[in-house]
Image (tube, rainbow, N blue to C red; front, top):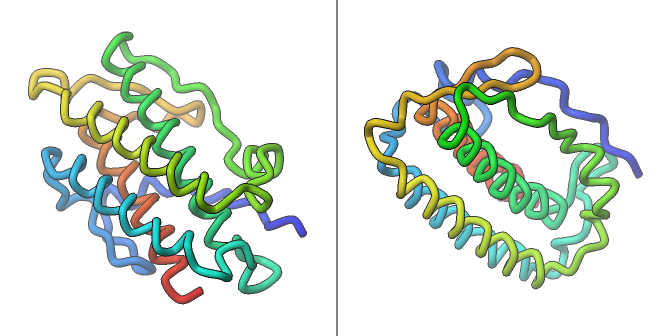
Length: 173
């Protein structure tokens, strides 16, 4: 069953705490991003070991497995975006249709144990990439296709909200 695409512009989380998950991106210290990512990845492992991980709670909500596969891909996409900012001057990020990816990659049919391992690996890689950014490079910029501009710092803050938010999404599953 298809899930309605999320078309919201979530960049507002850079200025305002998220009322759903409580995450306050503006308060995140850049140096804390790698630890937040690693802790988030560790928290997904028991979620993916639940017997109902692949079951959707209703017709309009992804299963914990689908959210975890999405988070794994978010880790990968944002590592690529970070590398673009660090190697190019004001790059435009390739567009990513997360909903089309979920369907094409069959998130709902993936193996939860495999996703747990891949998510953990991707989290470690993106955490290492953020750890390696020097202070002088944190102001470098890149932009999405819709024109939203991110510095390395705001990209990190914006990025880390996504896995935190989705872990909150599955907490009650």
